[in-house]
Amino acid sequence: MSLGGGYMLSSRKGTQIPAIGLNITMKTNGASTREAYSLFEYAIPAETNGPPAHLHTREDESFVCLAGRLDVTLGGEEFTLAFGDYLYLPRNVVHTFRNPYGEEARVISVVSPAGLEEYYQALGALPPGPKDMAVLRPIMEEFGIELQMPPVGER
Image (cartoon, rainbow, N blue to C red; front, side, top):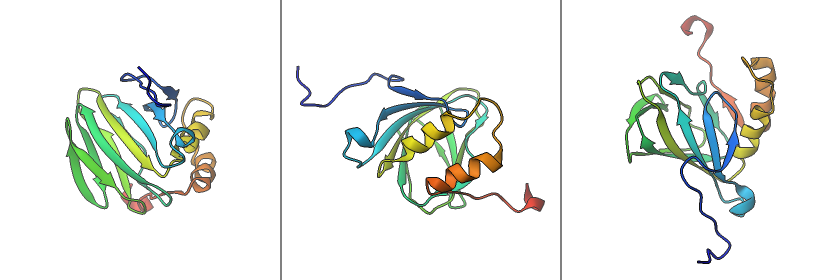
C-alpha cells in the first residue's frame, strides 16, 4: 500500500527528545508538514510537573488526552483532561500542566506553525540534571517562549 509520501508511526514511536523531564516523542515536524505544524506524543510520568508557567508568542497548541489524566492551567483557569478530551492553548496565553495522579498520562500535542521541535531539541542538547534558569531563559527567548514566574513572595 502506498501512502503517497506520507508515513505511519505506532504509539510511542518517532524521534525521542529528552527535554523538560518528560518523555517527548516527535511524530512529525515542520520539514515534513511544509512548516504547517509539528506533532508530539507526551508521556508524563505519575506525580510529575510539566514546565513552569509560560506562554508561546509564535505558535498555538492543542492537547488530546490518550491515557490517564492531566491537569492544565490555561489563562488562570483549571482543566483536567481525561481520555479523548481536547484542549486548545492559544499563543500568548499563560499555561502549564502537571500529572499529580498515580498513573502515567499520555497526550498528543499539535503545535502550529511548526518550530517547537527545534526548542525541544535545544533543551535536549543541554547536559542532564537540574536546569539553570540563566541558561534556559536565553534559549526560551530565542524560540519566542516567555517564562511567567510568580512574584517572589508567591512562590
